[in-house]
Amino acid sequence: MFTLQMSILFLFGYFLQSCKVAGDIKIAIPGSSLSTNASLYAIWSVDRAVDGRIGGGKCGCCTAIERPCSLQLDLQQSYLVKRIVLKGRTDGAYNQFANITVYIGNDVSQMVEQPFSTISDLVQTYVLTPPQAMQAIIVIGGMSGKRDKDYMVICEIEVYRQQDCANGTYGPDCNKTCHCVEGPCDAVTGICGTGCKRGWRGAACNETCADGSYGTNCSLTCSAFCRNNRPCHHINGTCIEGCADGYDFSTDKTCNTPCDHKRYGRDCSSICSEYCHNKQTCHHINGTCPNGCGDGYDFNRDKTCNATCKNRKFGKNCLMDCNCDECHHINGSCAIFKQQCDTGFKMDKDICQPCERRRFGPNCSNECHCEQCHNVNGSCDLYTNNCDGGFRLDNGLCKPTEEKTTIELSHGELVGVICAAIVACVVCSVVTALCLRHRRRHQTSASNTTESCQGTAVSAYDELSPKTKATSHYDTLTITIPPTSSECEQIPKALQKAEEYERLQLNQKTVAATYEKLSPNLTTGEQYERLETC
Image (tube, rainbow, N blue to C red; front, side, top):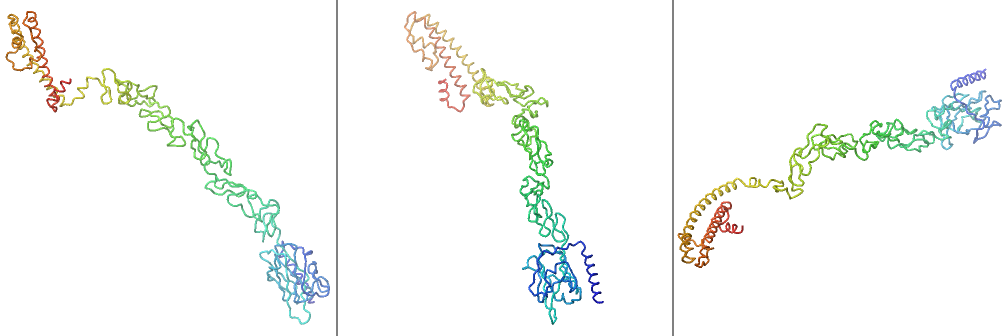
């Protein structure tokens, strides 16, 4: 009766255990190797522990090993084991599981003791949570305390692994991922037999490519033009934050393609200026025109050539002067803005051109009076020292000659000249009166001399100036006149010469007086020296 009850209890427990572990996969033990270090009972060999049968002492399906002993089971490969079940005899061998210990591991040198989860006289179960990778199981049987022969009896060793993982997962409870090119990876190690997919590396193909690389075997290099120098996606090389300025993310996610023709900047959203020199395309990153700007646009202020010339400039590189307050930035036209030309320039075909060679001033209305002059102020000495006839160089300008006294004489000098002129007029009047008086005397003396015609030239000469003591009047009359009638006829001519000499002397005194007025700082001797030099 007791044996029947125990059998029913064993079957009921086995049923419950099977229900509990539904979904676990039993490892096929046949083919695995078993070994022991102790003596066996009769013919109860170790291979009976994995023959798939259970029963009593007469079934011939159990192994009995004399204690102390060990039984080692080597599986064909490593499995993620969830549960180990030891089953004993069903006919009342109550000490069969007494004082036994189970060790598990992949290497017999690194075995780990596994505590039991449930135990009875018939079944002993070890549940591994989470599942453990193992390839070997060792069961150690110590002495149970019996006095007679003491045996460890095991009818069956059952090992259960976890279910197969879906492709791309492995490990305990399939909680790890792998990225194989094809098929599943190893359930325990994750090793991909077919290699890794693009963007993955490592034995289990579960490590992304290092920053800066992507693709199959991580053999490709990310673009250097990912925005903010961020790394690209490890699989396809896409720049995570888009492209840096000058590269087109819309057509190439890897950011290796510069902006298309005539575009530049962030997302290639800016358009190149149409005023680049010779209509060239601009730089794809910053929009700079490579060879400068076309006429009328200022490259110094704006390298993208969108800024027109300013500050009265126009033309190539804005180097030409408008010569008016505002002109067209390309062709320099002042007329388009109804502007007047600057001084020294004249409108010619809507452009303010410099005056011609002999013209200057506002609207070129003034004449230089030299071959070429400055177009603004009329200065001739920049080009020549020769003025036209009737003009002379004065302070760089060619001016009429008569203007010199009026322009050059200071106020004091002008007053001095006027006073000198007045004094000269007075002196001339006095001298004229004296000369007339002197002439009358000479005429009377000559008449008397002619009538008498007696005496010598000396007496005739004395009659010319009977009241004058000065000897200067006789300087030119020191000649001897023979007392002949023909010679007497020449006396009037001598008198005329004396009169002319006296007039010359008076004129010299007048000029000297005038010169003294003009040069008051010179001594009298210096004044007369200058007169004599003249």
